[in-house]
Length: 184
Image (cartoon, rainbow, N blue to C red):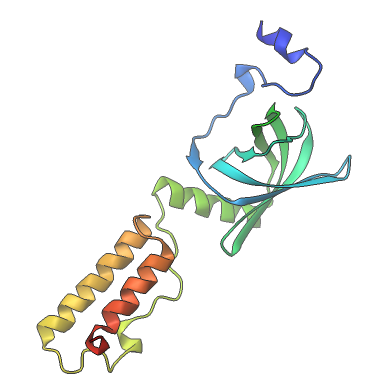
């Protein structure tokens, strides 16, 4: 029965279970740009999950099964590019991609994202303000108040690394913490 679906001729079906993914997938939302070099078609969409072996792209008009494409995923300031093959395609839903060729530099980006998603690597927290950058804050406080501010700062950073706070929420909280002596 499964093989009959594959021979339906529309090019939009799933591959047999033998060819399914071997790596875990994680929820991952990023901008996706896919290019079919053979037919010179390009699509812009979004991913919904990512794993070491591939990703799923949400799109109403996916490429047909077995199409070889080049995919670029962009999240925040980082981009990942790979060659991929469509292994699942359903019109109106999206397509599952298996990565077939990844450059070493690109693999570092993919490994970093997967590390963050799996919890094995903390996310990078760029350009957070530190107490050293604001020596005037808390100048009249006692040592205990400064210490509690430091502890709260560390707690906010830990929550950001675990994904409980977004980068923007964390930065806002830290800035409010650092400027609390100047608030009415």
